[in-house]
Length: 360
Image 1 (cartoon, one colour):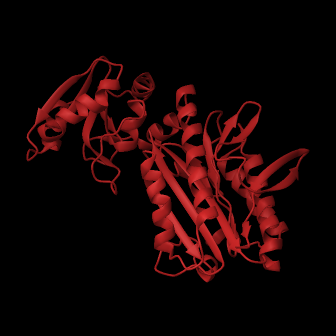
Image 2 (cartoon, rainbow, N blue to C red):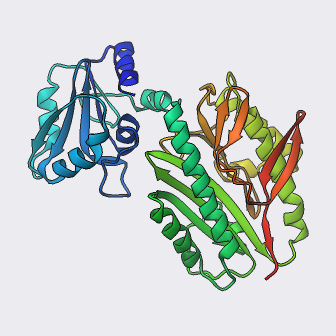
Image 3 (cartoon, one colour):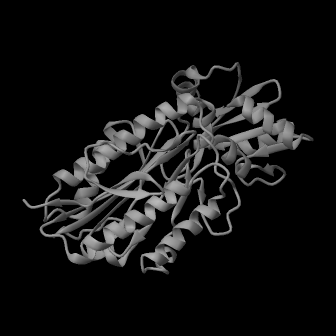
């Protein structure tokens, strides 16, 4: 990964690159972590990558743990620069990079913002990253599916979310997004954060979970009792929309073209404007969405990138994490332990997640 950063430096004629974001730190260090606060993208130390050197900039409060528990797995030689926690690291960084052309992953005066370029480079995964992703996605999907199989009417959305969170944290995941909606809230809100509302018949659970810097995205639904006709019909319509989008995600096609294929299928299914009510997903990887697709997106799909599309219809949402491979696309959040809707598309069969119907 350091070699990729240095290639980017050469391409952009930079003297160095300053890495501050926690996802980029994980990317460069093989999945290690440099954060304390969970609700910020910034880490507590920086990596300054030069053409022939690497400098870890860290305060004394964090130095021991970062070096012993995180940088111990870093397979490149590096120098360490420390300061007191009350010192301004920005002033120091300005001093050591004076009269140098430096790229950075955050907006900083006097530095060149190159995060979009870093995002593109890191989104093409190595074999080891794919292996980590496979395990993470499987684990995340099993967590959501197990909670759907265990939850009971009367539990609040907060209680259901806590079941997901406990399982995810126990497996070393950091939660980026955790949504739970029940009954009418599924129809009313496309991004439903959990509330005190109690489950009656219908629940939707969304988890975006990070481990080793990579983010798995998965949604599942459960219904208690007889599935209403509208859901019975629309779940198949949604599965067809989802299938079209995932099938279209092939090398050489732009992300915008994939979205347009989905939009066309929305229209065929009788819901021409439903795609406007929720973003439809896009490229994922070291962020839950590296790129959120819009019709004008021009970036082309590449091999070994990962995508999560999340089309929705009233009361329904479909979401899985999928990798683009040479012979076809593969759903990493497929467990084989769930019910699936089989959709035939262009001579191939696709399995999209069904609603779990429970009668207890």
